[in-house]
Image 1: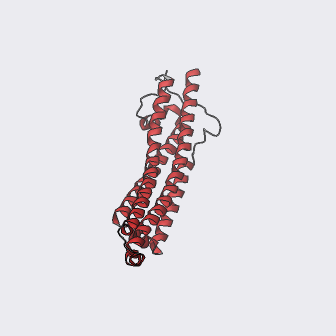
Image 2: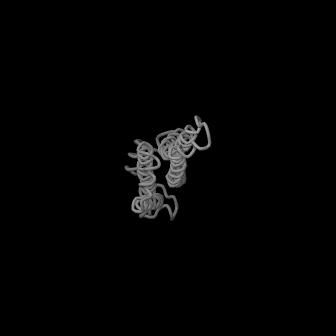
Image 3: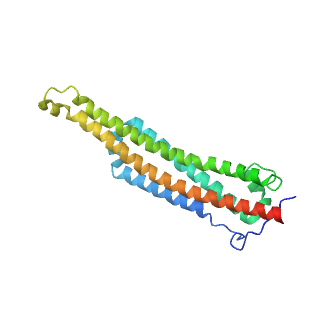
Length: 218
C-alpha cells in the first residue's frame, strides 16, 4: 500500500501551522536569557561567581546553555514534523526523512508505533538529563559548602578561635547557598521546557498513529 495524505480533520489540515510548541520554548529561553543578562548587569553574576568559584560556574553555564539549545532544537524538530504531517500527511518526504523511514504504511503498525515512541522518547529525555544534572550539581555544591564550613570548626580549642575561622566558615556557607540557588534557578526553565516537549511529543505521536490507522483502514 502506498502512502497517502490522510484527512485528519479541519484543524489538522490547516496549511500554516503556528509552531506553538517551538514558540513556548523560545519564550522560556528568552526569559532565561533576560534573567541572565539582568544578573550580569546588576552584579549578581559576579557575586555568584565569587561564591561558587570557577568550577561550579563553568559547570552550571555549560549545562544551562547546552540544555536550552537542546530544548530549542528538539522543539523545532517536533513542531516542524507536526507541520509536515498536517500539510503533507504520511506522504511527506520531510516527515519520512526526519524519522529515517522510507515508508510509514509498509511497516507493521505496532512496530512502527514502538519505533516512533522510542525515538521521540530519546529526543525528549536529553532535556530531563540536563535538568537533573543541574539539580545534582547544586546538591553537590550544598554538601561541599557545608563540609567546608564545618571543617574549620573541627580543631577549635575554644570559642574565641571561632572568630579567626569566620572567613572560612562564611566562604563555605556562601558556596552552599549560592550553588543551591543557582541550581534551582537553572533547573526550573529546563523542567518547564521538558514538560512542553513531553506534551508536543505526545501530540506528534497521536497524529502519526491516527494517520497510520486511517491509512490501514482505508
